[in-house]
Structures are given as structure tokens and as C-alpha cells.
Amino acid sequence: MKKMLDCPFCNIDHVKTMTLFEDLLVRVILSNPSLMPGHLLIIPKRHILNINELSKEEVSSIFENLNKFQKVLLKNNEGCDIRQNFRPFIKQSQYKVDHLHFHLIPRNNEDELYSKSMIYERDVFRFLSQEEMNKLMGEMNNAN
Ligand SMILES: [Zn+2]
Image (cartoon, rainbow, N blue to C red; front, side, top):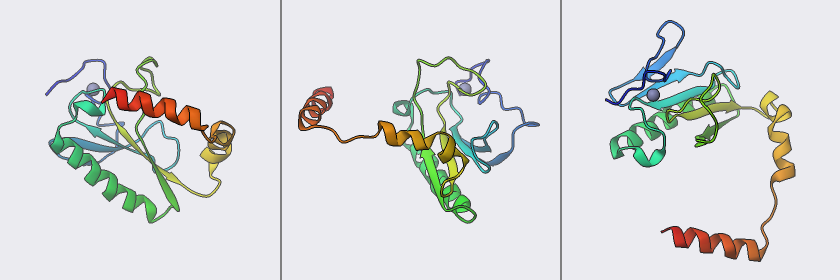
């Protein structure tokens, strides 16, 4: 299995990290730092950067765990975000790890995350013009 020396997800600190589940392919941990109480990370054990490197078995295990742990979080929360950020332009830090992972973030109506960040999405979110849609469709179709 490919491991990176400077990667916190390849070198899990078992004292500081709470593992909720693991098998041969994936690990589910309590995110720390955490955006919301109950924020979880689902991490393939192989050090890979992008979803296009996942095997079918890893995809299957990750989605089974997203589903399973979303159900767990929904027992005590109204909603849940599932996120995966691919931002190779940001340097690895305490808040950004260059090892593929999926976030499960419990959400509640107008929670702290909403009031401090998501509320600004409303200013960015907008309808596309027909011209913009045609241009984007052209770009997407050319990529295939
Ligand atoms: Zn890693």
C-alpha cells in the first residue's frame, strides 16, 4: 500500500485520532479539527489524491460508509453535508490534507456553519444565461 511520510492520514496518530470504523480499504474517523460537532472523515487507506484513482472496491466501501454514517448523524441532526474538495492549488496544512477524503458534516437549520459561511453562498449562487450554458456544455462535451 502506497504511504507518504508527511501525510497525517497515512500515519494515523492513534492517540489523538478517534477511529469509528476501519477495514482493509477505508477508515472512518472523527474530524479534528472539526467544522461541526460530529464532523466525520471517510478516508481510503491508499494515499491517493483524486477520486479518479479509486478502485471499484474503494468506491463501494466509501459509499457504504457515507450511507451508514449519514444515518448515524441523522439520528441527532436535521441534515448532513457530504463534501469532497479537490484543491491541489492549496498547500497541505493543519486544515488541508493531500490525501483523498470525504467529509460528512452534520447540519441543522441556521447552524454556526450557516451563519458564518454558507449564508454568503447566496451572494455567489446565480442563474446561468443561455450563452453561458451553451459554452459550458461545449466544454464538458469536448472533455469526453
Ligand atoms: Zn496519505
